Every structure is written in C-alpha cells, then in structure tokens.
Figure (cartoon, rainbow, N blue to C red):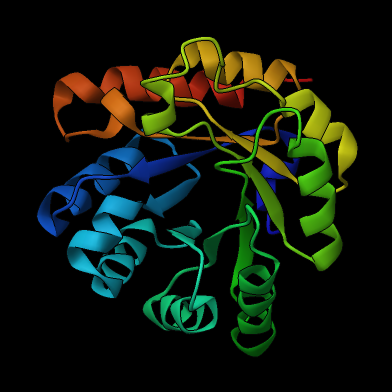
Length: 226
C-alpha cells in the first residue's frame, strides 16, 4: 500500500458522502486545507454523480490518493477498471460472503493498477479476524473495519473501534477503522489502526465553522504515535 510519508504516522481518509458534486468539491477542498491525507468519493456521491465524481475529486486531491467507496459486491471488475480511468487510486469491495467479487476486484488491479480495499461491513466482530485473514490471503491491499450507519440504529452496544486490535493481530496488511468521532478515532489508534476514515458531521458541508474541528481531528490523528 502506498503510504508515502504516512509510514511514520497514522493517516486520515475524508469520506465525502454528500450526493451532489458541487457540494462534494467544496468539501474536498476544505478537507485538503485541513490536511486530510486521502480523499474518498463516498457511496452516496457515487450513486448521485457516478464516475465523474471521482475525476472531480482527483483534481482537488492532486497527489493525495482518491478512494472510490463502491462497497462493490458484483460487477467488481468493470467498476474498478472505470474507477481507475476516472482517477481513483483505491476502490472498495464488500467482502462478506464475496470471494468471487474480491477476486474480480483483484483482477482489475492486475490489469489497471488500482488498489483494493476490503470492507468488513456486515461481518461480525467475532468473525472479523478470520475473514480478514481470508481476504488478505487473496491479496487485497488493506482492510476496512466498518460498523455501518443502519446497523448502529439498532445495535447500541457495539463501538466503531470494536475488533480493531484482533484484526490487526490477524493480518500483515494495513487496517483502517471508520471513526466518526474523535473519541472513536483515538480508540482505534490505541488498538493499532493504521488509518481512520470518517465523514459524518465533520464533512457534511464546507464552511468556516467546519474547518476548525476538522483540522483538530486531523492534527490529533497525525500526532498519534503507537
């Protein structure tokens, strides 16, 4: 995985989940100004605007990696190939019960060079280490621990950072964690996460009021040392 200067510190991935391109570009500019390391074309943005959103965010991101968060389950080869054409450096495959989709994503990596992130969304905390080992053995470039928004409306006991330590021990590739609050991000780092991805209230609009807390989040992550 490309880490550049990030091999000396954790890095942060800004998930841009608004559905319209104009707002997404403005938020991406704010994320870059705040020091975010990776820029993500979030699932709602890809649904709303398609591949052109990737190209627009890459223009803002410059040398920063851009992630296409498809959470793809089927048709992975074509999605990943098109994402690379649009400028994505990484794309996300949902790996719950999805070896074949993961293999197709990896076939796209072989053909075009796009890196593959394996999202454990839908995998239980107990099963996450084993599943992470399985997809790591297939050759993915990174693991994403992701406690989804819908599940969080019904499961009030799980934390976003649950399972990070166990997954990190199970694999030799970088592990990330969704962390929509600074508290969760700090906990994820304590458990060994290599990077965090987040959106929520930090990245729902571009405004001067949003910039300061966003920069504080980013700076806090950059200052974490394990």
